[in-house]
Length: 253
Image 1 (cartoon, rainbow, N blue to C red):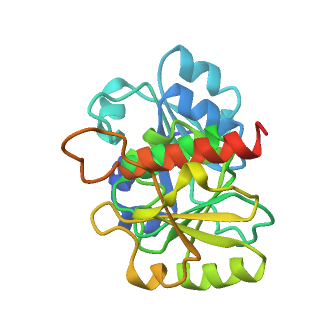
Image 2: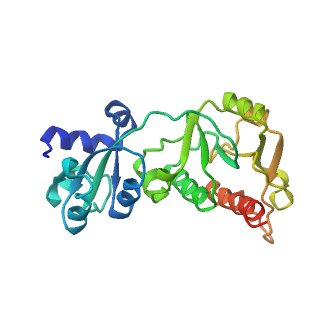
């Protein structure tokens, strides 16, 4: 298989959401990430690279593999220090929004791709299968999101939906909706169940007033510091605390 000069230009443009949508493709870079991709149901378009790792992985995708030199990799890569492997992957069709049990994380207009990737990685670590993102949340296929997820995104079900509609559907299925706030009840006193949805808000504005109106109960992480209080925890750090406490109760009980 070969790639043209136009292919190289098209692949290099996949760092932009507009181009990812137009082409229906995204990039995955690095050996570990592509090994995780290989275990998933995602469909590969091209495997591009050079070196020993490329030779090994190209055996799995012989018809989609293209050997190139370092200069070509640098032209395609979104990274400051390009790796020796890049996968060009088809964006899958949206999966049907159907959740039997949780717990579930819901993200209300999250904007930082690193935060999204870290939350995905953390949620997977603690056994959470579903993450629901608002339509205006940062793109799952942003290169920084993909890198921060460390392959966990290929193992989870991540939905982009209208949150107000989604919350109504979840409530009809017996879920209760909890939101993260500074003035909520302590997470350490909350009894988690398999029908919990935890809403995490935008990094700067928190949970929107429209979503807040649909929340059944507010939860918070107590501040144990002495003296000057920090404004709040980073949203990915807060997600880790909630995920950990949920797993402690539901998995280790």
